[in-house]
Length: 485
Image (cartoon, rainbow, N blue to C red; front, side, top):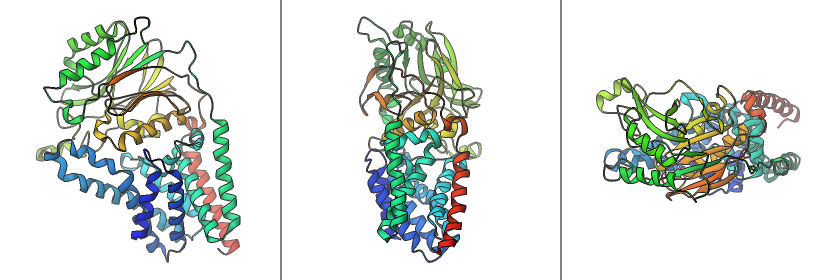
């Protein structure tokens, strides 16, 4: 069990910012070897749980950061959150190992069962697909294949590579060579097929604003005006010749509720000098509070508002919150009321001169199904976030990596404005074309790259991959019976 947990932790080294994806392949190959030698489905389940716990403990170690913002109030929960979340998510891996072992030790069963476990993690209980194993491919040409099968295809390909490597170790050269040859071919083809996506000379220029307000200072009455004035100054700055076509502020960027922000919005519009501005704000309707994205047009009028629809459990709201608030339990991120309410769903906002933008606030950029739920195909993705909650080590970089993945899945560029970074312009092939580093205050003008043709994944989602995986599982079982493996 300790060995399995250790292999799981090593497998997590492929995630950002470390990016050692070969370590992930080797570690998972050894995990597959343990699975092949498991005695029965119960033994396999215990191994799967240990592997998953080790993996998630390292990959999601940033989860303690939000609890350290207010140490006196929430710090005691940090270790319980990390251990509980890791052990809980690992139950899905335990189920995958158990099902695969109960039906034999065929490689197809292991690959399919674990990929389906990650599918379940994406969807059940509102989903939490952060740090999927396939995310280790994001900095490689394998990222291209997400446009066909999304992040789950990358995960399946990773398990193929790991199992093929184990077969070589085990001496089954035919299976090992065939599997690794397929991965090498996919890697090379991904490099060759990744499209150029260069913004033309007439591309709109977008300015992203990064105020770098540390979370423990963000709402400090002595600091609030400093951060707001910083964003105003960054919005106003000019080289004297050109102005951007759009200015984007990060999540919860203004220090007042949108309902009462008349003079605040006037100051922003004055600084923007006729340029539309997108900004994060909080607002209310009746007794409900919302985490919102607001659009100011070139005349400084409020043109559109999007309310975040996929909220962070226990961060922005508490399940059964109307009951639990009686005991003083509320979402950590909400500044007003007892937590946020969710909006009606995904929304495409029209930005003058740029086209339709799919609005995404922070956590929503983690979910491929949310992006696929856009009512119409947008011209680009626009994500505003406050990654100060995620600390300075791994969380912000993993969040950025997932933003790049969403762009590839959809074939759409993304504007990403983050409070503390990393703010970036991402093209439709997942490349960062301009960025502001983590922990730096500043602004960045960047040309908005064009969209690519609609991708297979954007049209079909995860369904075809799941059907294909089940067919492969059935075929592998048939081959296993014939070969007596």
